[in-house]
Length: 67
Image 1 (tube, rainbow, N blue to C red):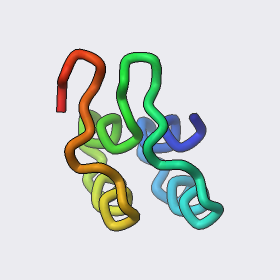
Image 2: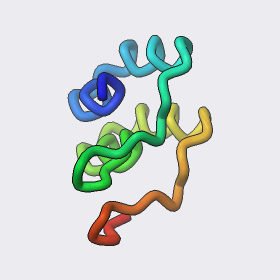
Image 3: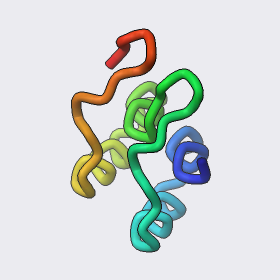
Image 4: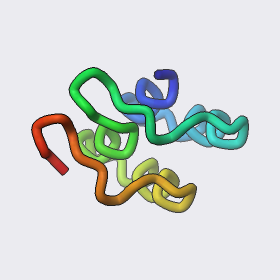
């Protein structure tokens, strides 16, 4: 998703714009990575915080059970 791509690349302004425009923040990719998991894996902590503040599931897991 656009949100996943923005989270992966650290584009916080794009993430904010997508959230303001009601982007679904829990849609996983084929491996089960949500935007939150992607941002955390890439160490984009500002995006992690923003996603959590907007209701991202802190217990999200990939299809292989990674958190």
